[in-house]
Image (cartoon, rainbow, N blue to C red):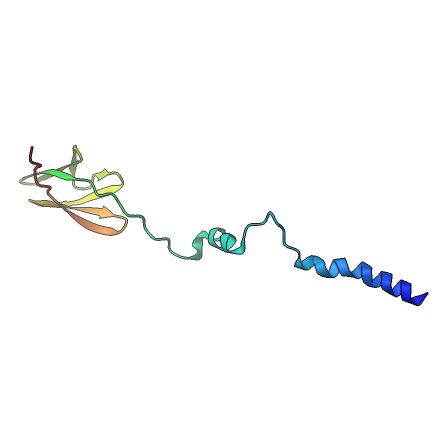
Length: 111
């Protein structure tokens, strides 16, 4: 009589012991969870910025303007999230997420 009771007790304990090893089939893989779980895990790489075209520079006395992608901009103005820091005679300096970038005056296209 002791043997069947002992056998039943052992069988009742088995599912509880093995339940920790079962994996939820709907749970994402561990690598996916780690990659998306914490956005503060490290600095994200900065996406490349599409640089606009500098078409014209207007410099006269204290006035400095640039025409970038058809828009007239003064120093301090922004275009597509890029700030115009400095206007020179043949180039401008733009503030980009990757740091300052010098944009040279584009050569006129030939017909």
